[in-house]
Length: 350
Image 1 (cartoon, one colour):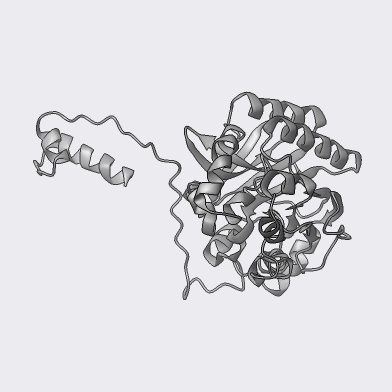
Image 2 (image 1 turned 180 degrees about the vertical axis):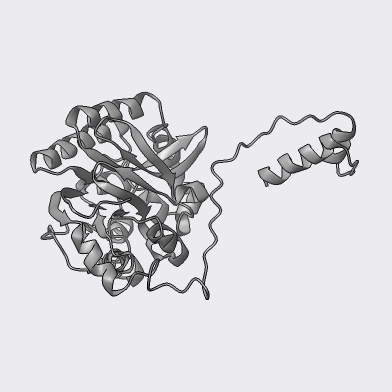
């Protein structure tokens, strides 16, 4: 059961990634984590796809123009359990704090918008993938599954994480709230692109989404956020139209309490740094006394949410495709025990 008689210090990062450079990105990650540790933080949270940086090129030009970045972006994406991942985990272990990381994950030739919780011992407590990449993100990234809507126990309590506009998905949020989440990481890439042409992409709407999550779920919310600076323009800009679309700054990292109040002084939108706050988990009990949408303020006799928890299913199943079982796989029902077993396996794979 969650503990509510404790206070923890946490940190949210607002910084510009090391664009398209995984080695430099890991170095910057550990440097910022060390800074958070020096400030007394027990947990530090990083923005969406912090490694190797959010792919802003998807928003700035034609598919033909974007293609110059695709291979390098994939090459600098993290592969779980391999050299760069292990280097990162060892660095976290050496620092001795919990890290909630955003990154591009590569599995085979496919990419996913990943998040992970790494313990002070360097153990990976949870990895997840954005359930549905947003808008043009779908041209580059695959989807998560039911196992990715999860909250895990950490040394600082029950922790969960979502990316960006997953905070506009009511069913996803409710599934998270129902897991007794105490500390939520709402990871964002920056609020700069198309500032004058797409109000919904801006800071006012999306900072509000983080605040609403805190009030709805009666939990603390860390909202780390990326920054667009000179390095981003050197990587993706280069002409007046693209530079205007990309903008500058966009950093709006926040920490919110379960009653919606802001708990840390914001940095300037162009500034890189870390914001820190002390969280008293007793405030969660006070907030839930007024309205707990997954407890006494719910109406399960009227509304219920069904969540399919199946994990990452295998892409290929080794099935006995001989005799009558093979006939069933071809669409001919035979009625034997082997057929029934095969039918069950095929149904589980759908």
